[in-house]
Length: 371
Image (cartoon, rainbow, N blue to C red; front, side):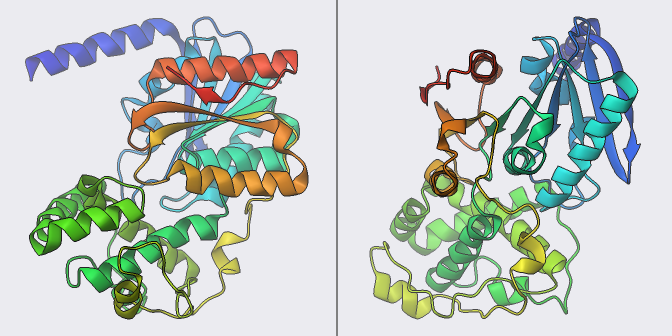
């Protein structure tokens, strides 16, 4: 414990030495944090955080490790401005609006930056792309990392289908979709710690039920078997959040024929089936993907991501870009990272440098592997 406290103290001292100023406050109910490095060069990164479990504390930018995560930008002389959004959970549209409000505040108080980049992880990567699509005139480029890149309905539908098929094959281990979308019985938000605890119990029950089937099922959703229980616990939080915000169930799998399982007939006969009770437009329309960007966007993804598989996210967005004739504004880098957003600061920094060079020279960053 003593060593941990000493390391934390050293980290805080180093951070303080490299920081010139911190501006915190609230805009329209959304807390924010702006960090200025000692060598600030009049440049700005607007940062968007990822999905946050309802009831989680502290908020993203208030977390003690936030400055360390922003080091690749701060070390390059960029100020970092981050909104914690007015509410937690699925807040992509809110993230776009609150980030734009914070950018306007920054410009009004500190002046127009020499250059402004948009960056974010996970859902924040989706905020990054949506911001470039809707407020791209205010930015030089974007760095969406492990992004929720595709259309929001389709990306979250993955969680719905995972539960529908899992509950058919492994009954009474995870929560049923009927219970998740029963808004007449609202549930209190669960913290990430509680979700992790539930995942550990589910993991034991899954392997006890049928370990070989668990391996096959996890493979279908592009994840390692040991990550299946956590993905279900995380997905339940997302789906409960969707049910609450949409006022019902926006998904419908009554006509879905599931494929690419070892036994497709069994899966389809046993899968949970629910009809939609509300339109998907209720929750997913605002700032949904269009593929209309006019500034460079350099995406960064790990080769393995148990929550947002790269092919699911990137391919669906590339299709939109191709439809709009905007593919020359988009390039993808990948790492050998194992897990959601599992990048090193060095990998983030290298990719950010390539994005800046793309903006400076006009020469598109080359897609490919990042050491």
